[in-house]
Amino acid sequence: MRYLIISDIHANITALDAALASAKDKWDKAVCLGDLVGYGPDPNEVIDCIRSLGAVTIRGNHDKAVAGVENIDDFNPIARAAAMWTREQLRPENREFLHQLAQGPKTVDGFSIVHGSIYDEDQYVYAPELAVEDLKTAPTPVTFFGHTHLQGGFTLRGEDVQALRASPPPSRESLSVAVEPGTTYMLNPGSIGQPRDGNPRAGFAIADFENRTVEFWRISYDVALVQQRMTQAGLPEPLILRLSFGR
Image 1: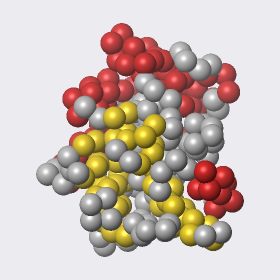
Image 2: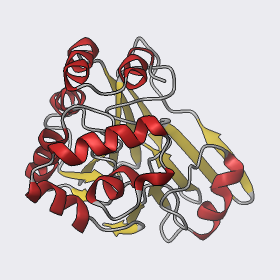
Image 3: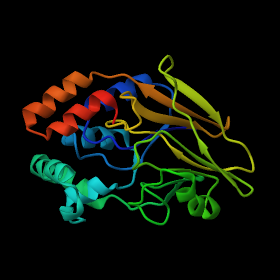
Image 4: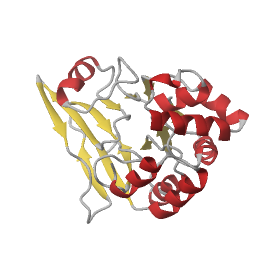
């Protein structure tokens, strides 16, 4: 069984379509780590796509905010404006879909999925010291997480916690990482719709546990087209500009 691991799509159907086209025939089951919506111009299209894939999906903080599960007052003004715009666009059945999404962590066929961390779905795990507790108490050897929009992750072997740099270089679309016995992993597939590591290409992962590998992918898409739709929708300019730089 091969798993397509996607996260942080943020209402960017162009990036999602490009990722799915590149991953065609390479996976058997889709898993989504949350934040389907927020920031981008295509919330209904993204939700429709994820539903059509039959993806095992958990909620992200933007999903909660848009669905009314969580108050958006704690969002920064730009994120709050995008969330309010998204609420107005969503069809009722898609808002209900977001409202019903499960909270992580969730176990899927022997691995775990969370949005932020195992103990706090809204926590940003962006450094080894923030991953230690999750790694030491993880219910499975591999946990996939999102939220930071940073592709890669962390490993624990004995008492040694290390950052895992796994993003493909500009000249390549994928980079394979071996899943070794005796090591615990927290792995971030990257963000489909709004990368923040200086690389604007859409990020995702394909896990093949029978062959003990996780492939990290980066795929180019038509950023300008997405920016045009965002401008037409009146979304905040900083959100539009950041897509060009992967920030």
